[in-house]
Length: 326
Image 1 (cartoon, one colour):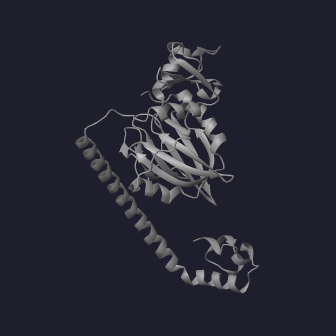
Image 2: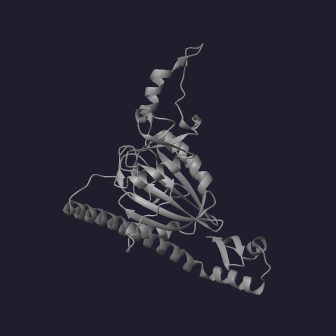
Image 3: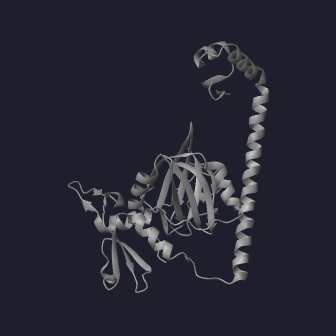
């Protein structure tokens, strides 16, 4: 089964942004290895985003059966992104990477879907500090670990090759280099091809002459083509023995649990620090609470003049919350 191309990612990003922008995330499912489903809602309608790492990310009309017991990874993802609104979907770094911006009140997170190599599903904070990843590893030029800053792969080799083939000299003898970008390429015809049994065996952007002898259907979106193709081709990897599958599942589960324990320990340390700061400033915090109880019309500017030592950033009496900077 072929992997998705850079051009397809570019076209998909635009379709996905139009389809899922301003929708809310309700649930996340890990269907099986490298296969995820995100349930969203928008204007009282439900939509499902299908992600098969390295192969597709598309709105789907075919809902696969859910595992009765959520995986550790799916629970960890739900904890972090359920209730967030999708702000935008875009291609990242002109590469096979989809970047989804999430918002919830003043919080900002990013979903980073890597569609190359073994693929990856990564959650970062607004500064691109990694909070959770499906696959953890360290490369020569970057690291995918909790609390490390996410960096996309370097594209030096691709740019150098382009420069070698396409560089030109100006009057001063300087070389002007401009690597190609898929963002400038547009396509509006998408096709699927079926065999004699009506099974979808291929999809393409514009017509593919290699499949002229097969039944062809023209579609209005790349997502629709991908959805039909992968609905007919759900087996992405070669079949393995039951023993190999069990060993692989156990190794994967152990690794993910180790990373979750590491993450929980860091979260515990962070919470201890936060707790200590709160305790050291409890007297001032109690003063803020008393002021708000006595004067419900007070604004943050007036409160900051009365209380010294803590800066009040926002007052939300409706939800009974106060945002402070210690």
